[in-house]
Length: 238
Length: 73
Image: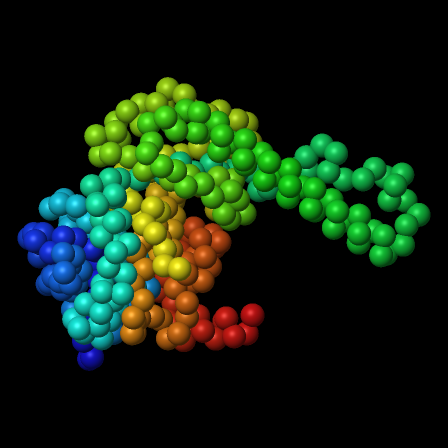
């Protein structure tokens, strides 16, 4: 089986590696470039398959590395042919990675997810559909246009509702966060997904504020998860 | 599974998948990853849009099966 170099995290070049030895976890090695290093592990072809076990293993390694010190989480499935290729990739993005490690290395993120209580679209917001009088007597083209207009109005109403939920969440916990990322209607089931960047010491206060000021709406359930490594806050290339 | 049955465990799993597959540091080079050419971000979105009870099944599908489905879509 051909061996490759799987990357899990970015750390300072003097960082310690976790003593981490479950049999299915590869031996970790540092590949350094200037003041940064990539935490890597040898993997075969199986290591690049998208399985639930592989995803959970990746996260477990990232969290173990972060217990040793500041680290940036690398996206699952980042695999290079060899250590030289990893070093080249570090060199290519050295400045933003170094800045992100300094900014985010010891931070965590908390996630708030607002789920629709029922499938969206089952009840159309008031005023979203034209009245029967307007629809009656129209041809197929007009009916299609009415339906399309109704769908667009419904989507806009849902987006507006999601935006107001995001604002409500922000009112409850926003003051505790350093930064936030908001995604409105990321999937049909989810109204809002928000990530809040925190100091590690701020997690308890965040949970307490969420519990105390929990956003209550009939059409939504809001759930909190975390703390996670700050996946949502690293800069993307380009 | 109905949406109302969507529990904390499922949300945690989806949050994990969303982060690990679709976020985090992106290193571009001669990356050899991937699942036989299937874009991981796209694959991640497919997973997130799928019913939770099908996640293990979807996550264990072979790359070739995914590729065929994408090509046929």
